[in-house]
Image (cartoon, rainbow, N blue to C red):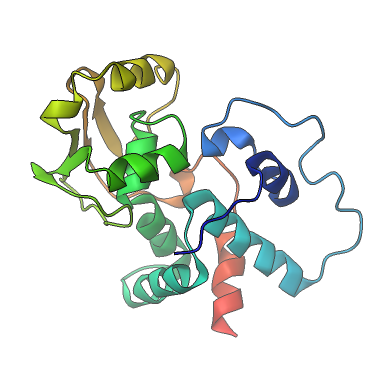
Length: 198
């Protein structure tokens, strides 16, 4: 698996997103996208939107294209379905519920088998949760000071309406699937659909 080693703040600035989307409280000194003065082509805009989604969710090209193919076969708009697929990844749900500080940390914690889905341990970050699934911290991890500190530090983080969080029990339930309106960042997902439709 390819691992991105590019500095997060530098990448956020290029893509024009806030580092808070990645779970990083630090702000970059310059305005996002301020150094992009030259005119960008239509293809360039489409590519940037795709890069934005790939970077935020930490997926590679092959995995992203596979998710897009799944999204096009589902009922409804392909763009909305793609967002739902990306948001329903287990590592994304762990980050959204405030059980990890950053998205990269969420991925690592899932890999180390700290979380269960409906009572069964899952160690695949790309595992897609479904409506009604309950994601919880393993019993042996609940006594860890690490997770108590994480929950304290993420109390101010807004949990999206499609998740019902229970931080006292280190768990969350998927109430419904995510939609583009639930996102805390701006993305023109229709440009990604146009890019792959060529």
